[in-house]
Image 1 (cartoon, rainbow, N blue to C red):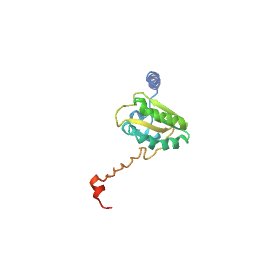
Image 2: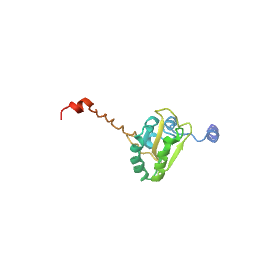
Image 3: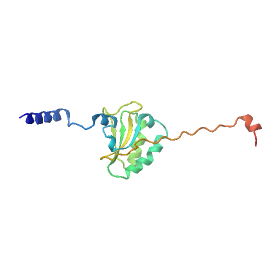
Image 4: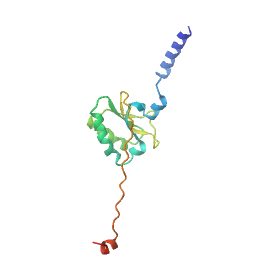
Length: 150
């Protein structure tokens, strides 16, 4: 009898609140997905950097050629930031979703872009490699150009 009551309570809870999800904290961090399904994670701050699109494009192309991958974008970010990625995904035939629910957060360290799989892939490194900052070359001064060694 107690087992029947537990089943009835589980059924009512599922009807009221939806089916229970595994790893809810992890899903909040990964725009509703899971770490084990993530091929690429780009935070909001990195997404705002002008060089990021060029870094992400080859990865979008790589994963668009494989089945079961899709692009998730933080729908709470400005459209001018997410639109180039949506355009690129559309051109490559990579499905994408703008996530605007409670998992999408505006903080700099929150997730801005994910490439995810329908199944576990367990990539060890899911972060975009940092590009080495190029040191600006010192311009010779006018004095050096006029009187410097030739």
